[in-house]
Image (cartoon, rainbow, N blue to C red; front, side, top):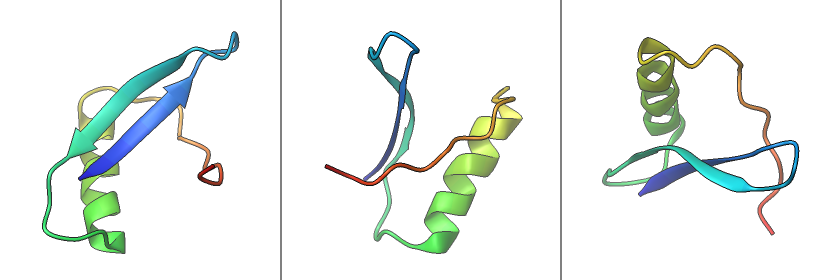
Length: 51
């Protein structure tokens, strides 16, 4: 499962989107981001390292 989580300026975490898939791949992430854009995402996500 791919999960995209955002954070508000106050530090609150919010679920942006998710996708169930067979494996984690560049294509799967691309599909998730294209879907989010089609549903109205206007600010491109910035990546942060997993903790």
